[in-house]
Image 1 (cartoon, one colour):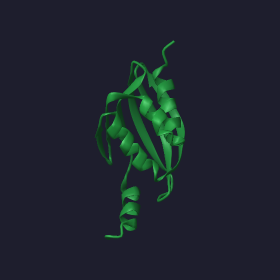
Image 2: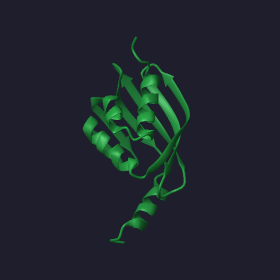
Image 3: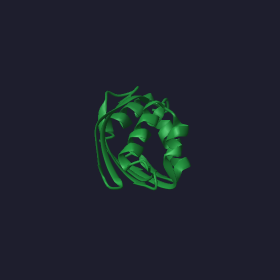
Length: 123
C-alpha cells in the first residue's frame, strides 16, 4: 500500500525534527524544489544541504496542524531555534509517487535574520 501524502509529510517533519537527514533525503524526489523566505533550492541534495544548515540552529520543531488534499499537504508548525524564540511556519508540500517534489515555506524571517546578523563577527 502506498503512503499517503500526509504520511510522507509527517515522516519528513519527524526526520527533520530528529535531524535524521539520511531519512529526510530518502523522502525527497531527486528533482524537488524549495522556495522560502531564506532562499531557493533545486534538487534533493541542495534541499538536504539547506535543511542541514537550518538544522544546526533548530532546537525543536512542533507540528501544530497538518492537512492533506490529494498530493498536497499544508503543515503549520512552530520552529524553535537556538537564536530566537519559537516562530510559526507554514509549509506546503507536494507529494508524488511517495516522495516530496515541491516545498514552499512561508514565515516572517526578520527575527531570525536579525539574530544571525548580531552573531556575525564581521558586524
